[in-house]
Length: 93
Image (cartoon, rainbow, N blue to C red; front, side, top):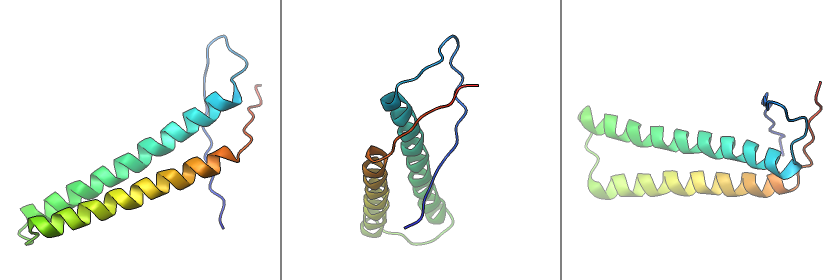
């Protein structure tokens, strides 16, 4: 299993401490937001294909849409589970 990590710089005026749960929630929110943007872009790609003459009927579109949503939701759920096991601490300079 690989390790995925992101580094965010969080500026909080006048606050030198941020609770661990808030740090996790902030990071998880950003991950959810990015995954959501990715699957929305897949929907735009499907629409572009339809606009460019590719014959994608309603049944095929619905099937592809469901797969995109299923995979995105699975990814979010797995990341949420992994975040629960993390111990995140910030070191303020």
